[in-house]
Amino acid sequence: METMKRSIYSFLVTLVIMTGCTKGFLDINQDPYHPEKTSLNRLLPTAEQGLSYALGFTNDNRGARGLTEVLSVYTHQVVVREVQDQYGADGSQFDINGAWKGMYSSSPAQVGADILGCLQNLEVIITQGTEEGNKVYTGIAKILKAYAISQMVDVFADVPFSEANKLASDGIRFPKYDKGAEIYPKLFALLDEGIADLTADAPNTAVPEVDDIIYNGDTDLWTKAGNSIKLKLYNQVRLVQNVSTQVNALIADDNLISSTDESLLMRYGKGTSPDDRNPGFNDYYAGQKTHYQSPWFWEIMKGYNKRIFTGNPDPRVPYYFYRQLTVDDPAQSPVEYRDGGFLSILFGSVGPNRDWSQDQSMTVFGIYPVGGRYDDGEGEKIDGSSATGAAPYKFLTYADVLFIEAELMQAGVIAGDPRAKLSAAMDESFKMVDFVVSLVGNTQTVPTLSGAAAADTYRDKVLAEFDGKPAAGRLEIIMTEKWINAFGSSVDAYTDYRRTGYPVLFNPKDPTQAPGGRFQPPINGDPFNPVQPPVQVQLSRAYPLSLPWSVDDLNVNTNAPAQKQPASYPVFWDK
Image (tube, rainbow, N blue to C red; front, side):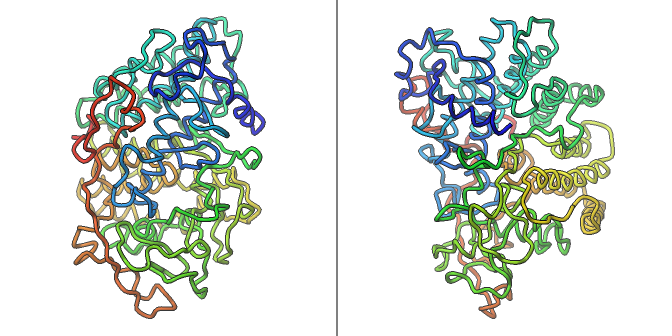
């Protein structure tokens, strides 16, 4: 698999059809109307990895510029000092522009280790595969295209779709932006087409094998993935349309992702030349680290939050976070937020200790989100050799499917016991942690989480809390557990928050969270400061209901709309 992934990079110099979305990429092919054909087995892995790059964390040295870099901050699992803080990312923000190009562009977004636009390559696979009668390829490409566009709609609201990537076929240089409400029905149709193509009677002189770096060409798994994506999308629109018939049909067909290893993942590797590791692993070898772990997220998982899971510490903590300090170690610089060995900064902070360098002290990603270290409590400093970075990007896991079903049951859309489904989803979330640990393959001895007494105790306490809540509180518990499970891939967490209002996120303007605009870290959390002082926090912007469009596209696309106000431009399913 790593050999196939490395072949992606040799393909970077090969250019396919033009998207017409950005002027800077219009002069690459001498004749964009008659591009040279490229084999499907080179296009597919490029498209698959391109999708994960556009959605995940950013590592610019390898051309990965992803939406999770922004949305992990907006969903309060990560804190940064950059413009994402206080919801400040605009259309010129590096990761937003990079993710947009990573989806639509037909050329590398930069010179060097990069990939071609995911949607452009998928469009070529669909066109060329149809001409050649290679329907398995077209089926996979249609499913991936539907998923990719749905993620773009969920984040940006309105995006190019009907005219996108149509320069070669239709001569469209500047695609219009379609309304999200008009796009979604076409995505369901595209998913149906893709699922049908997988088993269609066709020549199939070429079929994907190891070049499919997600499922190795397994059409049964792609069918399950397509159906599971449909279930996910129907759930997302349930507040604006009646989806009972469609959802119940999918449940009755019983052909969804149904085990941990069937999850829709981009499995990264351990290679360093070329770099095949999860882009979020870059903090391990970066000279200046940028991703602080959110104290809000930490406190919920530690059982400190007074609203939810109070006194119920989550056993996933040492798999999610790695502390470079022990409780007895001094910090590198003056501290803003410390809880024993955990050190971070706060969202919206204007405190005096926010901007000190803490590269050797800050808590970093653990083994689950990016393939870092399991926290064994030793407080070792990290570098590129500390772990493998081989954690996958999670597009849609089996746990996600179970959480979706629990939500649908709680909402009364399908029959069933939401409590039992929540229990199964939490158990599966623990299994996913173990599965990721097995893929990462660190030299550490990492304890099995699933079935451990701590995991069972945590689950049972969550279920007891669920039993004591009204309907809204039960939905909050389901969505909060789903948010915890999603760590490392933030697009759906951003979608879920805007759809349901859960989980409850940190708000510096909320007097119950930050009285008088000050957030109190654990008072005795800093062993070198007997009373840890409150930190001044602020928020100058409303929550963004969608992300701003890429300025690079707006500046050259004559059919693009004027830039939006993100706080007042919701996605169509946001009721």
